[in-house]
Length: 269
Image (cartoon, rainbow, N blue to C red; front, side):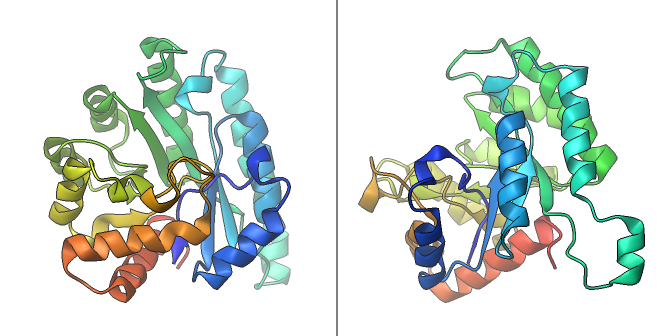
């Protein structure tokens, strides 16, 4: 399985990070993507990904952290990305040299829930980072909370042609149709197991199978069995099981399809 969204660089995992990876492997997780939420976590995520073959990173500034975002911060993200790429001469000498550990820009987007940064500032940073993704030819991980209409408006104008996933999708069926029309993917995590998540399960049932990827968003949004506790990649099988039940398929087929989808989305094939 591929956990396409997990914050393993954060302090919540400082005491047992190696054991978390071991439990994930034992549960069938072979690949994890660690997205960032600010400049510091972008550097941490890259450093962690450079130390492991089962981990890739995304760099970016979360909407709730964009209060001071501007040209200097965008330039720093660009430099982080470029510094992580192998030198051209290295590629010529050693064809097996490891590619960049950075698989995407993210998580970026809009968040109207916490109201820590004004909508205009969030939108400005969002558009700038979408431009960076286009410049660097990287996929994008979108954070969207209570802002689907505005987020989709920006994506129609600035996100056309980008490979992109709506992380922790929580929209309506109308939002799902709009996301699919743009050619994007949806990320499904622990909330699909919550008893009240009827609309999310309707969206999982309606979405094409080749547009679904799975995630934990650990240490957040643990599945119902562990709700209120720290989440971790080993729990992603519960998400697979729920998707399989909704789609009347085997868990093995869902695991295999979402792995293929994630590798295709993040160009890890």
